Image (cartoon, rainbow, N blue to C red):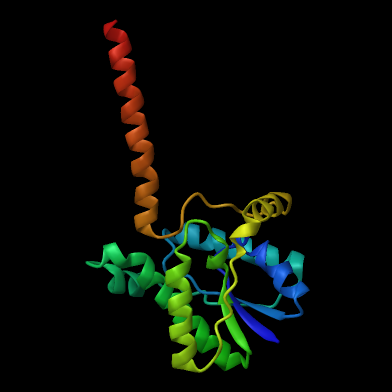
Length: 193
């Protein structure tokens, strides 16, 4: 069966891709990630996927247009639901692309990440499957978390430090800021002793 696999980044693909191939699927990739910010990060992730495609000999379709404006139009003022909205945007486009390409099903590498909500992804995948009349292939790839990390390091792929959206980037720095402030507070208290 031909499966269109939505690819969020190279590292998250290193575990699911061989597993799907071993199960007899013909995997075609699809890089569509309008959530990624800033543009430099978008280019780095696309470059990492290109590297992986070359190493693994996988055909990948790329949406090269930087879609941040459309992403933000859908998410702003709905930040509390941003992940659900982001999954919807990417899964819907993947289902449409899968139909265009004549694939037998579609799936996503988001199912590899321990940080993504599988229940929501699965429900939205099913919703898109019904809407576009193409099966959503669900698999819990999280069991291969460490294997994927090790493979991405071996392959020297670009490894990002946050989900990709501007909100997750802010959270990343907010955590560092909180830690820094906490450490500074400890320093101040030690100086008083």
